Length: 424
Figure (cartoon, rainbow, N blue to C red):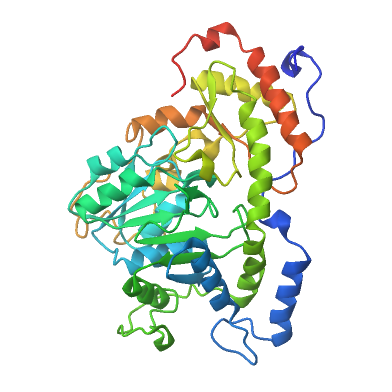
């Protein structure tokens, strides 16, 4: 499409709002209703006992483990709960460091602090995922785990990260919260690390509104995870011989599991739909300077829910965002275009109390200062990354409208904005 831009008084590409995101929620239907009603009819929404339990959480755990190709799974209340359980299963605690990517949801950082450990931020690679080179550079004797976030439906480049972990004897925790159903070299994410997690919150690939899962091939880590989600109480039915310890309640409800069991069955249909639409959107910029589709470690494994773009400069990105909004096809910054450590609570290390914190020198012997300059690549890259969020509510026409808007806007980019460094 050509013609005068809407910001200059021209006719916009689209006059009606784009559909919302929430991929999993948009496939909720009669199957989920039936499954929830069955739990309610049994009057047994608790996972371990009741008048007539169906043990739906157990069934979901088996289904997810089988799908991922891993031995053990533990259902929990949320993705953040899954991270806390996984970290505690690894023994993460006071004085320890956990490496996390500079681009992620702040729940990842909250989980580390909930374990009374210190988050250490690794810089990004060109895929906007955690960089193995950066991870290796910031490992210290206090490093207890590396959290690899599979960002926005696509796998991080796992091979070099797993190699770093193996070289240093440090566990890898795959955070697959945003990427259920994504693959890396033909295998689903969540099957590579020592212990891994998923989220089923409202924004996620499949959803019950909330919910999470911890998966592992290690029976000892599985036993610890079971206890960590159940008040620190080992369950003999899980074969645990652990002594009890202090813990909290992160148990998944049978109602949550009932919804998710039906969602898992719809994964292939959802993934095929959004991948098709994402392909239309990404291809639209293939011939324009100053922009490229977000590079992926494994394009064939992309779950497809968030087609993204990288612009040559932050200035160009800002101009394109303004122009696309006027065309009725607005594009979004991930996480406001800044690294997670710029979130005010993290930046200032604000706790819920005024007592001992994970950074206190009586507990922690390292140095962890947050602020501008910490991860230069992330700070330079994130203001020029944008994305769309797709769901089953999106049609091919919606994708075509975005493609038309992108082509129209990129054709009209002022020459001075293109006289910049190449993308990457």
